[in-house]
Length: 145
Image: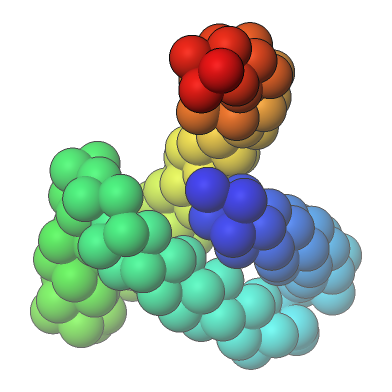
């Protein structure tokens, strides 16, 4: 459970860093009248690749249905992006608006999973295992006498 927490923590931090880079490159692109749009696309690519890998990895570990749906929807999105890339207005919607919304949703979902896992670990650590209790050991010693 602690390994899952560590891996999910790394996942959330990397997603946060990529989302901050994405916001910065979008701002730069707007201020430069689109001259840095390639950099924005590159950040989108790495963020999408990271989140897709995360969805597959954690979807398999936890058998998480929502992450499975996310992965399936991501493949549908890529297919639609290829088909609709020749239509400029739809391309803008599919290249900017939809990925930003989806990336932020997946980040929030991962962050919520991390919070749940932290609470689960805290609750688990607070409980003493009955087999490790001193009371059981004392009773055993009395019975052995």
